Image (cartoon, rainbow, N blue to C red):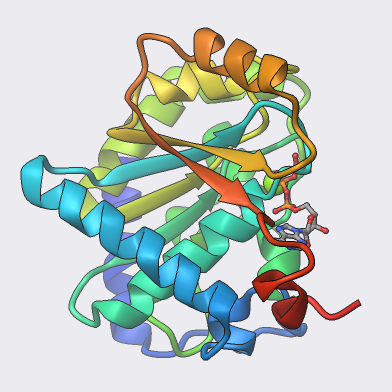
Length: 243
Ligand SMILES: Nc1ncnc2c1ncn2[C@@H]1O[C@H](COP(=O)(O)OP(=O)(O)OP(=O)(O)O)[C@@H](O)[C@H]1O
Ligand SMILES: [Mg+2]
């Protein structure tokens, strides 16, 4: 599989823009749809915080989880990956949707959802079929694909370990979108293999108790910080997310 993915990366480098996407990008990907907005600026700030951390220690694999569902993991991961791909034209950046429970990356980015990670892990497709370039950007995306019967088992298996190894080899920055930490074990399973874990917290929605429980659940992992999402519903974010 390692070999297959490296080939896929080479294939994408040669392919230039890759296949055009069939759908529209979700408007909440503000780094694309409203790059001058205050929200896009926040993603850039987040990106440069990670860059400063990278100066201190290498950090290729960065994963996003939250205590509960719908806190903003997928929007944050996609915006950050897009920000990174824009900021560094020489870096190879990949966004992996590792949330088989509620996969969103394909939908948000308007790309073909299958085949993806699950097909790759099942050995049902080649690396180059699951890995695709997002429009003309530097960003490469692996959508989740069809949900496997046992998502936790698929992520805990040796094929996933091999894949993460291949991604480390083939890319400079890997962003993983994970399921929430409290309802599922998936995030704890994968968190052990990443260089940095970010906890997304939906402001004014998730209670301290759940955040504390999630942090406890993730103890022993490389939790590098939290993102307070949708922190100003009546302020800066309301411009970027018109109702
Ligand atoms: N900062 C924000 N302001 C307004 N809406 C937001 C913001 N962040 C996310 N949303 C919206 O909240 C919903 C959930 O966001 P998202 O899919 O990123 O969450 P998630 O944590 O990945 O959810 P899931 O647990 O289902 O994977 C989406 O409708 C998204 O568009
Ligand atoms: Mg999500």
